[in-house]
Amino acid sequence: MWSQRVDWIDELTVAHSLHAECGFAWLDSNRSEARDGRYSFLAAWPVEEIRVVFGDDHPFEALSRIHGSPGGPSGEGPTPSEVPSWIGYIAYDAFWSAPARGTPRFSRETDPIVLFRRYPALLAIDHYEGGAFIVGDDERSCRRFLDRVRACSPPECPPPVIGRVRADDAAAHRQAIAMALEHIAKGEVYEVNVARRWSASFEGDALALWQAMRIASRVPLGLFFDGGDHAVLACTMERFIHWDATSRCLVTRPIKGTIRREPTDDGASERLRADPKERAEHSMIVDLMRNDLGRVAQVGTVKVEAPLVVEPFTGLYHLVSTVRCLTRPEVTLSDILEATFPPGSVTGAPKIRALEIIEGLEQHPRGVYCGAIGFIDHEGGLSLAVAIRTAAVRRGEVHYWAGGGIVEASDPDRELAETELKAKVFLDAVDSLKEGRRE
Image 1 (cartoon, rainbow, N blue to C red):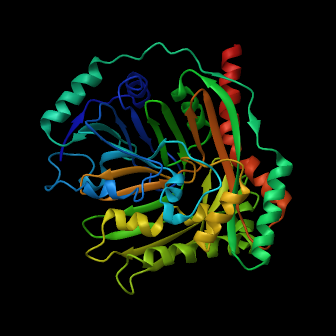
Image 2: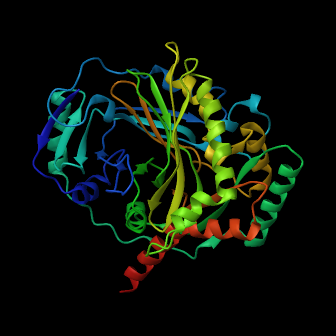
Image 3: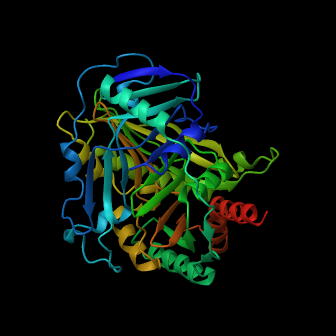
């Protein structure tokens, strides 16, 4: 891998210059309060693509041909394990792609369920120490990328036109929660995540909506991904998995447990940690993730570190734990995905039965939502976030989802209110764009 420090480049200016270019992607740390936020990356002009559509029996196999490049960094900046080589996403619907999973309730179109693109060079912004770097495969690729960036200028983009936002009926969602509680009472599951959707007609610049979302909520693991005929707009704070291909260390940081964050310190974080319902919800998912990691781990290496940490985000607090292991020598990237996908924090426990219940209770297929977004690095490692706080723009519409984990102690009204709290990022962003258009 080759890298070179460049004169300070304004991240927003470069983003607006590149977003009309082929294959634009922006991995955004947004200078969040949380960890995982050192580098942002801006990329365009991919040279390869892996695209898997619904119906593929083994949707992760295509990623198994991706291997790391030998050799360390040449120059300053992030290390090869920190730099994306491939950027993309895995849709939640990838789980239902294989016929062996059974027949899902919803039909899925031939939209991508796995979409990754390889970028020979990109721009890295260091938010800890300041500065910017061109990083990539080799010096030639990096210099060519820098020349193309300097030749770009921001296109004239009218503000997006967004129609009235329509939410899934609150009474229907409350009924879905009640049915989830019945499944729990019967002993079929201990926990199941149930979500609802917000939708609106959409025309124009999807990046403007995502920029409004990232202003409304500062998070460490954001992604804007231009898929050509669609766009993924993620403002997520949850680490799904990080796998270092050299050390073979695999880490997940599940989030489960939420409370509103007030402007003043009112003890909300302490109440969250002490809440028996929130602790139970969180502990079940930590156990599930321990089991998932155990499928690929060396015996005795699965450990829970820093359990029940309260982390602050815009407008809310979350409970977070860290689960870590060392993978066996023969384990591959696709093996890890087979063992862990979809993320347990957005499905439930036991996972397979929870997935079946979700399919029966929700009103729409999830698409990208609750899947995974992120990158494969230059050493062949994997860095993925959970696709929550995520909107998808496609075919003249924008869709956004929010949900929560249902356990025996869940109160339907409280769970409904939690979806409204989590949707606030999207609704505030839409309102800000509409207000700006009226000025």
